[in-house]
Length: 278
Image (cartoon, rainbow, N blue to C red; front, top):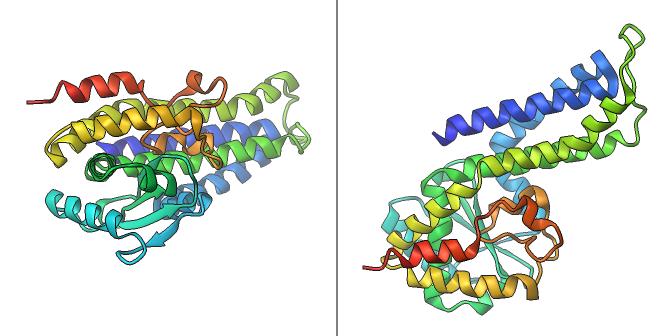
């Protein structure tokens, strides 16, 4: 199911790139956009996890550098019957974490320095079980591809501001207002495509994570702590294109972020988790 979602997502992002290319340069723009889309689709499928991890300066760690993180993920992966994912630490005081990778055998889990310092073992286990649930459910393929392509489309739209809006001589004259609106709306459209694949999977990962651990209290307590910390310790390097990857929205402390939130309300998530008791 998630492979089908990813295929649809790649097609939608490609169509959006072609629309931007046509607005910038007519037929020539479509040709360039098609080549760019082919390269981006290949890169998004095979290297999107590395691109996202590099964008947050995530550092690989093992049992020597992060013994508690390694022990918890090793135990959860064994319980879930999946290969041990690669582990990374993000040098940021904010409290957050995400999983990435196109399959359980190519997965990675990243946690911020802040969350490793602030969480108790039960809370951290709940957070990491949530992230491993995304790996088990293969949500990470769709979400990481979405992050890579949305970032690429946003970059193309921004670059277009420095290019002359127009068409080839062989093309009929276009409406400059329509072209300008296309460039303005392309990043927004990319974000809306992300929203379509993000919210329901958070509820599912919460439930799967609680079942993997054996109780919901650890994750529920972690979400309460994350809710309190979101406004107080904003994530310095947060990017709207990758916000949906994290266990809580890293943009929640910013104005207007709620209008495009990729996450359901934390109160609802905690309420659903606590209903699983017993």
